[in-house]
Structures are given as C-alpha cells and as structure tokens.
Image: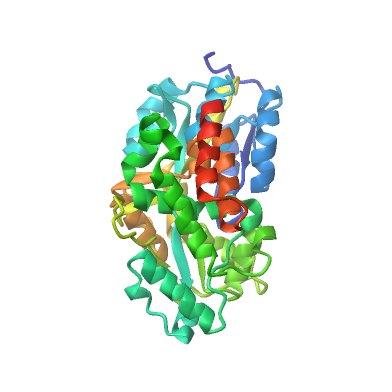
Length: 404
C-alpha cells in the first residue's frame, strides 16, 4: 500500500458515517472543530448517510477519486473485501503507538494479516429490549425467561393480553437476521460458523443452520410481529417500540437512542420502563448464554488519504471524546476501561455483557462479506414470512458461499 501523502496547504478530510443518535454526532462534530483549530489549513467534514443508502452507495464512492478519506465500518468480511479491492490504506505504522489503548478483540477486528486498516470506535450487543409496563400488564415475568420455550410462552401470553409481542424492521431485512444468527449461535455454539466457513460437516447445509431456520419459523408462526412488519424500516420500528406499540424488540445497543429520537413525542420510553433480556438458551444447544452477538464498529482510512485523515481518526478516539460518549450513554467505546465511564445502567449492563462474553460474534451480514451477508438477510425474512423452507435457506447460504 502507498505511504500517506504529504499534507497540502488546504486539506479537507471527509468522514462518512451512518450514526442517527444526535448525541454521538454532536461529539464527533465538536472533535472536528477542535481538530481544525489545532491544525490550521485542515477542514474536517462529518457527513451522514442513511444506513441503507450508505451500504448501497459505498462501493461506488470507494471507486471514485473523490472518496471519503474516513469511512464508517462494521469490520468483518465487508472490510476484507474492500481491502482486497485496494480501497483501504495500511495504517499499521501510524496506528501502532496507540493500539494498546483499545481492547484486543477490537484492535484485531480492524486488522488483516497483521496489518491495521483502521481504528475501532464502539462495541455493541444485540439483546431483547422489553417494555416493563406492557410485560406487567400481561403478567409476564422477565426474570423467568431463560429458555427459548420460556420466550415463546411469553410471546403467547403477550398476544393473549392484546399486546403486539414483537416489533421488527423486516423491511430492511437485517433486523430479522439477528434472530437467525442468535438461534444458530445458541444451537451450534462458537464452532458452528467456523466449521461451516471451513467447509466441514456439510458447511451451511449442516443441521445447525437448518434448525436455526426451523426455530425462527416456529416463532413467526405465532404471528408475533406488528402489522406490516415486512415493510417497516429499522428506524420506524424503533419509533413504534418507543411509542409503546409493542412489547419487545431484538436490537443493538443503539435502540436506546433511536427509540427516543423516532418516537412520536420525540422522547420515547423512559429508561426506567425499559428492561433487557439476553437471548435465551435452547435445550441441547452448544451455545452458552454468555455468547453475544453484536458489532465492533470503527473507522477505516481509505486509499490515498492524507496523513491528517488518520490523525483525525486517532484524535476522535482520544479519551476526552470517548469519555463524553460513554458518560452520555450514546455508545460503548472500544477503549480499555470505558465501562467505568458509563453511567446509564442499561448501557453499563451491555458493556458488562460484552466484557464477560465467552464468544462475541459480529453481525453475520458483515462478517460473511457482502454477497453472503445479503443472502443471510434475505433468507431470514423469507423463512419468517413462510416463503422459504429452512432447508432451502441453508442451501442458499452455502451456494452464496461457494460462489463468493
């Protein structure tokens, strides 16, 4: 990879992100202004793109000479594909002095073959968020939900009480893949995905992946989702849940912010009305209840970016700004010891889960790369909707894996 280019008299750094929580963006914008003040001649643009638009446009943006110099990344297979295509800059030498500040798994998420291509920003966990008032109204005791059967029983009880059990943004598909992913993890354990990608025991045609589809279909057959869930976006789903239109949502840590911002009153559920449940265990499954699904997200430096791009990414990840983010509860920073800065008990709970995780699997639609990840999202919705059998779903993933 080429060395970083020398600074120009006037240098503009463009950072592209998908963050919708105002508190997080405000911190990044303040960091940009502070960096500009300390680096005369450098301008930093913090540019938002809607999540789905970002994913759709990024491949084209990266092919352009006018590409952003810093891009938001979920790491995993998509990042590896970008590196193979030559769109990323090797920042190993520049990053080395500061990597000890980050957690080890977070650092490794942004490395390929020992080379560093970016810096980790935040960690997230996908959990069941539930509305305490609606659980109380239906007589559901969240503390007694330990197994998948317990969870299905709770769904039935909520439905019998006239409450929509689950809100999901099926229109964008990836929220549904959280169900299929967690079911696969609980059934097959940490080794299942590693074996499948290595082509062992039938790959994705292995019974583990078929069973994950059967369990998802088992849930969907209870008709637990809100009307029109196949057309609902994740932000609409966040707002519906924040409006109290359903009891449960399986989502990442960021729901605490998006449910408020997208609720009709702009406030959403109060924190003391929100509970958290870990994804339940499945009888006979190899996965541990302490295995977590979530993200390790961060910033990648793109090809031919000036050295100021990495300098700003490192500046943004410095303790003052990450401490602000932790204290405000807008995300869980990837810096070591960040749990101590978190004040929100719900965010602190998820930070503790991640710190104690026995296996943290990043989102499959990112980890498996763009072509296979897209199929995982597609089959998750198709199985839930009864449009595809679990066997055909597993075979479709294997086919995508073979063709990637």
